[in-house]
Amino acid sequence: MTAPPTALLGRLAASGRLQYAGRTTVLNLAVRQALAAELQPGGAAHPWTGWTFSAGRGSREQPAVRLAEPVVVAEVAVDVPLDAADRWRHPVRMVRVRSDPAPDDAPLFGKE
Image (cartoon, rainbow, N blue to C red; front, side, top):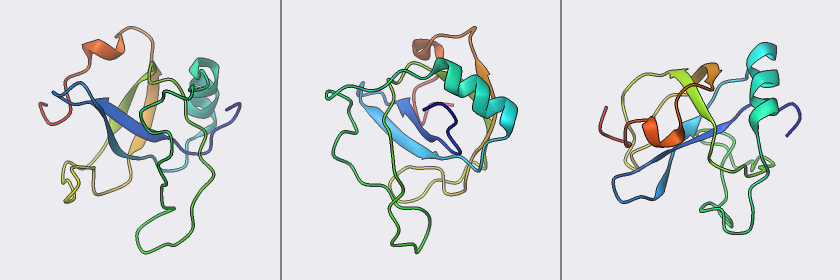
């Protein structure tokens, strides 16, 4: 968690569940450092514990994933199309980590 090359992104859904929203492109150094400074290891009760993730479309590779507490807010740039599972279809560019809003301040997934 000291230098994450990419990040898995989640947002709260109206149900209160942490919805997997997508994966970032490779993070630039400034964003990587800012994100690493905010990450807290996720515990056994993390909602994604036991999940597997793929490295990309058509890939059978499973990346090493370390779950973090879902308390970091980030500004992202993303195309809006969603796939059948309501995830962003295209990789997301993380612009910056935001300290001013709390996670509860973000709009619920699908309500932008």
